[in-house]
Length: 173
Image (cartoon, rainbow, N blue to C red; front, side):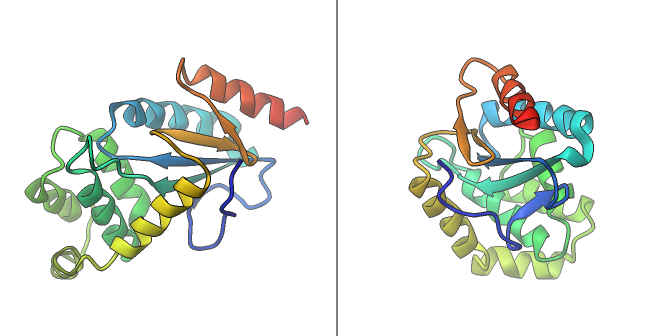
């Protein structure tokens, strides 16, 4: 069950009035999250304003050494109102999540690079990422990607079709 309510501080695509809300706890270095990213693009297009998508960080640094830095990069972009372009860039360019690649993406996303460099050097947004991690732990997230549809956890171990089925079921409920 989703133990952490969606708030204005979350990264959200779609209206608050959407019939279904999908919350993902993800990791930019996770290959399964990259697959989920592609599927979510299709689902968001398919359902339009009936679907609201919330992304939260859950970098699994034990297995993905660049995941936390990538999440910090996304939050540095969010501080400049560029979270979603950076989110797309990080999932579409997974081969490069080292600091120099992240800075390159920041430039491509149109960020003020001096501010970006300062945010990254000072780990200005690490507390936000850790709050997402703690929230995920409260929700019993064990791996990524982890999805919740209208608050109920959805197992996508055997494919994203299960997520679509859960969304379809929630649409008619």
